[in-house]
Image 1 (cartoon, rainbow, N blue to C red):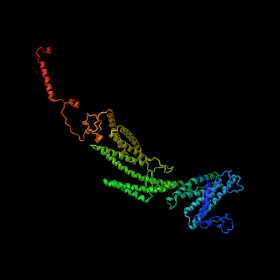
Image 2: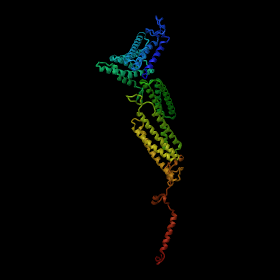
Image 3: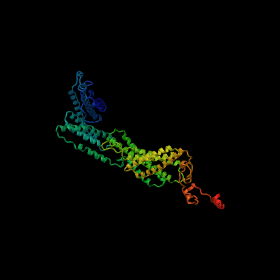
Image 4: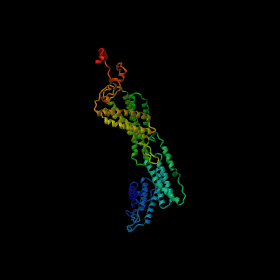
Length: 588
């Protein structure tokens, strides 16, 4: 890690020492004269070469070959990283320790250690192949891993000595095996996803660049080369595998998700039956029972998927692990979305019923009823916002498939949030209006109008949104209601400013209080503003000349008897003027 070959070299040395000193293999692996025949008389700490056992009875025998090859390779990389001015501590005697090492000596020592790593890797491959063929003590996966490791080490040595053809062939062999291991073998379970990701990363990030470099050097030298067909059709095979694996059971946010858990599959089938029964149920009690059963089933399904998701959260990230983790997260989002959709549909039905009841009431709607509508919109808003944060999404084909983008699902959810917020602001404004808080009510009405406009734009932009036409029609009605409420609020603000006495507690209709100066705020005490009494009460009307019909109630009808007396007095006065004699006109 981090190209610290010195540290890795030391680790391999210590690990190899622990493996050799295990009691089960100590007599066969320790290079001490004490455990070697015909070497009893040697010095106590003398190195005695050992032959590798012909029979493999312990796993440490194979691990010793692997760690020996890794130690030699790490030592070679460590030496190659040294500058020509540094001391070559490994392999120098005490007498020559002060001498400076040339670049040629460094390279020669590095090649020597790399050749030793190649020999040990080849020996490991041969021993594993022999055990797999004769004794069947080694499985096929271990055999493939040893072959890929041997090919990679031989390719490293070939590239270091500029044998490009051998390096290309060995790298191609190792890369083909890694591709096979990354796709998994028969009998593999989800616990091998990390190993499959490891082989995929090894093939893409390590072997593929080396293979392309060797191919470039061969083409530059004019040598012909044949690329294995497995590597030529690599991308096509991956696309076919991806297409085959994505044929799932449910579709959510642009992804087909396979349900592998048997218990979850049975539970979702049960939920489908409950949903069908819930839609057919008519009575309120049966609907409540079915509703509670559906909620319980969705909670159980969420628990099952969450338990499966925890298995992959502790694994190291990689293509296969990320794909499985994304599938589990999408399943969690699907189950939670179905539950939230059920809750929202029920609350939407309740609030619509209350709104229709409010419109048809003829007597009074108290403040508590309006508060219930506002609280229902609070619950709807909470669920709608939860839908926006559900896991899952559509990723770009070139990028990681778990990269979430703003798909149509998120756009629909945001539009629904704006719609619910506009209704919530409207009913909150009406509550403030009932409490004589005219200023706050007007501000909320303006905000409700703004949110309504944004909601209409967002819903119109959504192509496949459910009930989009119904939502747009309802928002048009809301615009009219907001305009009416705004007029009432402005009138109340004007009357409050003029400090005129308000008849707020009256239950009389508008036709009976035309001469009263009030704002029509009858709902202050649970009374609805009415233009006339429903049903209309008959009012007695007297027959009047046309003049009084036009003048209306502003000119009262005079008394007939008084008019007769007045007319008689005028007639008597006129007669007296006419009977004053011949010279009356002169005196008059």
